[in-house]
Image (cartoon, one colour):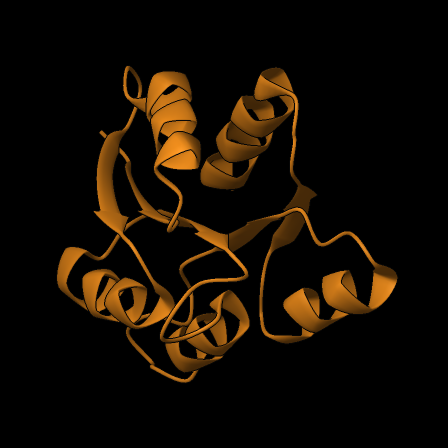
Amino acid sequence: MKKILIVEDTALNVDLLVQLLEDEYALVFAADGAEGVNQAATERPDLILMDVRMPKMTGYDACRAMKAEASLKDIPVVFLSAKGQDSEIQTGLEAGAEEYLLKPFAPDQLTERVKAILAK
């Protein structure tokens, strides 16, 4: 079973992601960017779904830290954010994200993108 690391500080968003993904994937969690970097190193997920605005370390900084680590750099990161300005999206992609999905997202859109990325 493929493993997904969810890095999200809002319980409601975590609950939604769990409902959408728990039947098909093993899920692990982190509540902020710093914990996300640690969990990625420990758990070696197949995909990381990460919020942008979090305490301790932003998603952008966490993504940059992961991409700087040889053992983590090939794990795809997908940002999930309500920040939809072009500059925010560009910053996320420049940090190394595979994709940047806007909240609120359609459940089908998320699950299809997850499947497509994991199939690569």
